[in-house]
Image 1 (cartoon, rainbow, N blue to C red):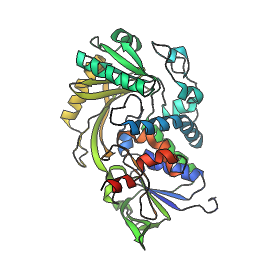
Image 2 (image 1 turned 120 degrees about the horizontal axis):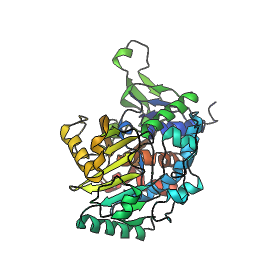
Image 3 (image 1 turned 60 degrees about the vertical axis):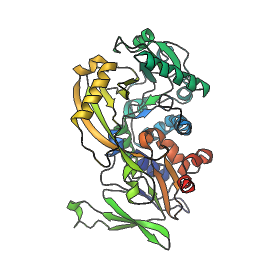
Image 4 (image 1 turned 90 degrees about the vertical axis):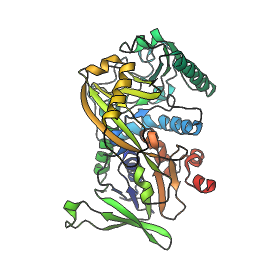
Length: 417
């Protein structure tokens, strides 16, 4: 039953952000409808699912680090709620080498800060149902220049008070025996985590279905305005449903635009598509125990292991508009660079290749909050961090993070212009 005074919401976009917003609004008793022609099949489907604000930090993105760290702290509760609402269960708990807070889960240093997961670690259902893992990220270097850059990054992280361990090449290979012998050293960000985005979106769709939230599989062609306010959306149903009675319009007291790279086609918001090609490889047993990152030939590459033996290798970053073709050159670069880090990847089966479109913004920060037009709210522009930032995005829209909301408020672009 809708809560008293509840607002009727239409969420445009069925990726991990849009579905998370819809789910949390529904949990609070707000009437919600999600509109997307293929829910869960956009950027979220292509994403690797790294929850890694520490290992992805750069010198110019401290605000993004603040957002990522705050959202990572929300992930344990987010995962627990989602697995419960989706009816997920697990037959087995965490293994000793994966359990947050154990010596085996800390790596070579034995003193890594894992307090975020110790306080509210992922339960067995989240581990099994969402493939939520908390073993951290290992960032490795090869040459002298790479090591110097990694040392500078370590100093920067330590200045910010981030948990990170400096490791020798031997310590890196002790943690991950499949690493190339040429690895000279690395940094272990043991507080990082990762999850399978495809499982997350599937769980969100199940949770919405269990709460009776309609998911309309159609494309929004435009927003509807009345008296200067957004009052709904116009739909273009799939061809096979054109004569099937699907409504051409949906009314709403609030439209939440969470359409990712396509958001700028519906409203004035500075979001552009950034293409990313990604591979999924498969082996009978996991090749790695944690995420591994490195810079090879000047390009960053990462390898993200899944519990079932899948290994995600990504990702290119291309300014190619709305081009979603998977190219031979893109796959070659990914495999070439991954082989430099972990030579054994060449023996794995290719399970899937896909290209997704990340929603980029001029400052790499998401656009979350009231648009300035009555009835329209933004939840878009998350670029590489949609999966990581989903819990924080919902919290901001629910009014729970007023200080951080200022960092990603839509009005910052109006102020620049």
